[in-house]
Length: 400
Image (cartoon, rainbow, N blue to C red; front, side, top):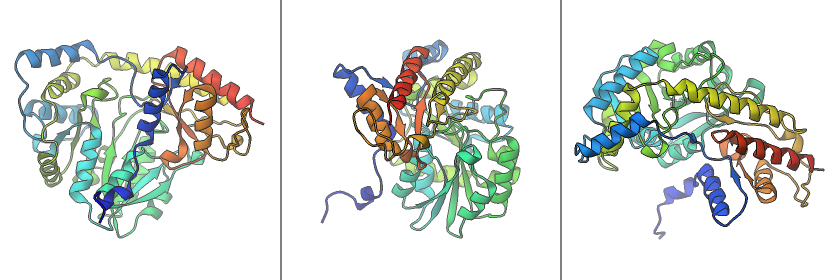
């Protein structure tokens, strides 16, 4: 009898964390490494948010809180959904967790039974399928390739839904591609979902505020009010507010689902960090002036990376609408050999050779369910991006 749970055989460690860890280890060993794997802003948390955390500590707000969030933060989240998305929620419909990942995981754990299917568009955030597997469900992958700008078509969604489908996980702007759906594109998907009343929608809006070129963000329950009673709208403070390490995510949805998620959380982690909750309250209710400023920096970096990667023979890099990732195709590099003699037979081989021969760390596309590609996070300095893209250019120029 094995000591470890058989459930672990269904999942694998996060490839993005693995790449970041390896890059950090190589740096610590004295190697010249530029890491483009981490999905977090390089900006510091804004001062007003840090000040709110310090004030919470000084005021002694360091005790246990309600399992899924303090009332003040839940109220602010309701106001945020009304202000930004036109969605009406009561505090009893809100859950606050230790990061956005816990919110998604709690919902899946609270709802999935063996055999239940979850439709996940590919490319996908690496954790979606594994969280479904951990919760006992089965991922149903629906491809959204470069020919559709990495966006799922209504036809592909319709084809992926079966009588066993319980959830559809939707992420816009997307990790790993940065692709974001227009209101019309999202309406076409919600029209499909309205024909399948057994399918619930898990909308991961973590990159909501990171959009460029006058793109208008919308979320499923906003576009189609008929989905309100079966949608969990998820968000958090990690990306737009540069608070990845503070670990606060939140969601709003039907009260029966939120109550079930609360039960899961009360018997696992219990409440999120009390200090982080007070910091998140300031993030949502304080000044938002730094967001457009940061976005201008991200947009400049996006344009820099897209231009430099598209200058490479064998690589095609679409221009994304949001987030801080690009997802270039390396189809033109497959079958070639590196200067060191490595044959590029997959995007994983490409990424490994790139790291070994140039010191640039990226995440290979197979980790996100669509090959042959790789993901670049441009949430780092212009200098790092210019140097890294220059090294990728030289690496690809040496392929033969």
